[in-house]
Image (cartoon, one colour):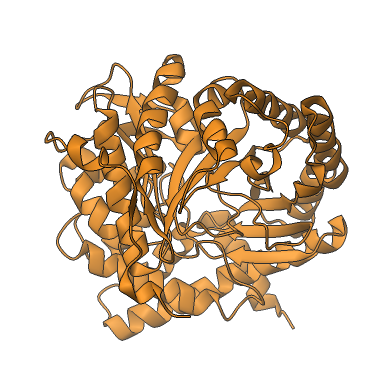
Amino acid sequence: MINISEVIETNKMIEQENLDVRTITMGINLLDCADGNLDVLCRKIYDKILRLAKDLVRTGEDISKEYGIPIVNKRIAVTPIALVGGAACQTPDDYVQIARTLDRVAREVGVNFLGGYSAIVSKGMSRSDELLIRSIPRALAETDFICSSVNVGSTKTGINMDAVKLMGEIIKETAELTQERMSLGCAKLVVLCNAPDDNPFMAGAFHGVSEADAVVSVGVSGPGVVKYALEQVRGASFEVLCETIKRTAFKITRVGQLVAKEASCRLGVPFGIIDLSLAPTPAVGDSVAEILQEIGLEYAGAPGTTAALALLNDQVKKGGIMASSYVGGLSGAFIPVSEDQAMIDAVEAGALTLEKLEAMTCVCSVGLDMIAIPGSTSAATVAGIIADEAAIGMINQKTTAVRIIPAVGKEVGDRVEFGGLLGYAPIMPVNPYSCEAFVGRGGRIPAPVHSFKN
């Protein structure tokens, strides 16, 4: 039973501490849309998404008004399109036609983003996978709402270095095709290792083949709430610090559970998962880096940052997992540079480097996220960065990802402006030494020995 003090506390978190539900994401299975005729396939995809998601945005808005809980985004995730389009698509242009169809239905139902323009190639690439991957630059340049992801490795299979090399080239091409919009296409493209099937956050969301025909998942947020709670115990011991984060994560997740259950009931679609991730925005006071500062760091990136982030991530999971019947997705703390004002400040102060961010990704939810680098960076170097992150994920049995923007025409000292939730990013320096011979070897990095558990 919820009492009046809990209602007052939740209202305060919403009004003063930037608490929100970051996204309601409907996952939709498109496997039954598969057809050898491309026009028929596109019509089936459009009709199914429209039928299932036509009330998604209105439902989110109604719940937000009735409960007073801000719901920032309403999104759709679909089955990886490489699995759906194989019979109909003979060229990358055919896949671009599917992307345009997805974009059109996303606009029709009014969602913010649609994810799942994706391929899962952790062990090898089928012809369909490669065609979709090669279509990504045009698909992202010619659409507004589509997000794309490619999973290039896993703890069980190792890392597909052929796919890693190709994705370095694809990211560069995407940057060039969208250079008039600050290479924005790259902000909607992520390369993953150990990608989860039930992630509600973009750009890595897709509807896994093990999921039901349709599900509703919720991504909660609330770094501002955690920061405010820690301000009340400033200088206290680590025991008090951890208990405060756990209790706060529990309260935040209960809000998400309420929204998820209500949306599931109203839409007639099963509840999937709650993703516990603390997702920052460019707004002041809504920052993961500010939490790290409140824990005791002058800037994110100072010595102790990785330990502080590990503590934060673990306590968020411990508190949140007790507040929801199903927890999944990524669940922890995001550290995107462009979407977190205090992260931007740390980069501009020289406290936070690409190498330190890589170390931090060993203990947080995702990986190198929304990082802008010089447009002159080579495709091989981008591939090397992807390989490093994939190795961290593979060895540590966790999800890692790279969402990196080689901003065309920009160099260190410049910045790129994306606007909205994507914010802006200073151009970060990249190690100048070559890894071209390494990424050019071809083949696959084998799975680690601890992957063999059958």
